[in-house]
Amino acid sequence: MIKPFRIDIPQADLDDLHDRLSRTRWPNEITDAGSDYGFPLARLKELAEHWRTGYDWRAHEAALNELPHFTTEIEGQNIHFVHVRSANPDALALILTHGWPGSFLEFLDVIEPLSRDFHLVIPSIPGYGFSGPTHERGWDLTRIARAWAELMHRLGYEHYGAQGGDFGSGISIALGTVAPEQVVGVHVNYLPTRPDAGVELSEKDEARLDKVRRLMANRPPYQALQAATPQTIGYALTDSPVGQLAWIAERFAQWTDPRSPVSDDRMLTDISLYWLTATAASSARLHHEAARGTEPCPVPLGVAVFPHDITQSVRPLAERLYDIRHWSEFERGGHFAAMEAPDLLADDIRTFFLGLSTS
Image (cartoon, rainbow, N blue to C red; front, side, top):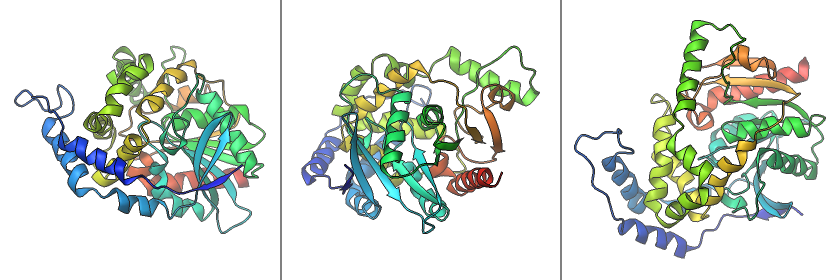
């Protein structure tokens, strides 16, 4: 059963958030530390004060409620999604999947341009936001992909495309693997490529692989903690709003292009979603579950590469694994492409999927 859903956070939860923010116990900081030891204290205090006194959740909640929200249950798990139908009844459907530390909010700025040509289904990953926490093992990328296939079936879509970045990329590729007869193509804006000694690469691609090698040799602390002990870090993030704020704000600071920053209010709406739904631990568990990986994807793939992403894909390596039909490289934008460069991403998604329909 699919049910309409409306966002309505209890006022007591907002009051509790403001009270906790007012009672933050701050650590000291080394003089001139910058970002050498972690997220800077002055910037975090600035964000926390704005969250407490300037940021208006109710205004953002009202704006979000202008979208058509729904929930359904799949394999015992609540699934929240936004469903926007195109004015063209024969339009292709697209399912757009976010990653961590994102949410369905990532796609707000691409809904209007994409819905001119596509029906849009924008779910919250199990364990994230209004899909609520997961309650059992095994919600890895492939199981989520199977749930997406069931969701699209319930909505009546026999053929559709999939798009995503971060975990959304892996889930979209997995969806093409588990439902190749239904998925016409997959478009991603994040596609890690690992070194392969058997492929000759350009100097530019070798530089990209050097970046990958450095990341593999020095696994980011957030990733190591969430993959190894998501429950342990979840206690701190679920109990302290400033802890949750720093944990996610640091990712935005590091992964966005300085030329296309995400506004503080948009970032705080995303962070508020994690806080108000108490999904820090359950969202972190996907780093643990995703270690299992996925099978090769048989459907056509489109790739958008943004210069300030965590890594940049190497096309000769990607072509050894996927049926690459479309490849774009942009001069601005980072990991949160749908928020940083929605115009570029929406145009690229449109070009890829409309191109498939005419090829």
